[in-house]
Image 1 (cartoon, rainbow, N blue to C red):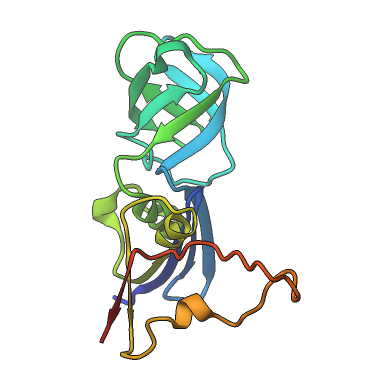
Image 2 (cartoon, one colour):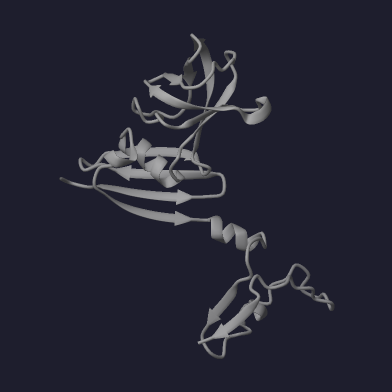
Length: 193
């Protein structure tokens, strides 16, 4: 069986996926990096059913087992999706009262790259992912470093170049300033190898 080629970039807000199927067709998917899909309630059908609108195109059954929550609802009450068709879901538990136009979120139990791969390849569950070669990149670590969040980091560099990152290119906003103020380095320690 030929394999899919899948490329995924997980960022702080969105996870983007490009997939090339065995026949050479390109498929795209974009999901929240929190592993959620968002949509709007079109109408409530009985006590447990909802018709929905969303800009993601999932195969029937993809969202079965996902957690459903109305956004902005008091208490953050969630239900589990027990059945799913193209634009219809059935929820478990006590009746959930919602109105047409309410925004909702479907939270996937898997990480965002898996959800994106499911959408791009058109499968209903993670066990059914076709054979694929996946390349995954992320900007989360880079963002945390630049925003100075997370744990202290170290810079590994060639022996003799420990001060290179501090020296930089000497580019500065005011070329003739006598009091040059440099930002603190992004790393806590330099290790020369």
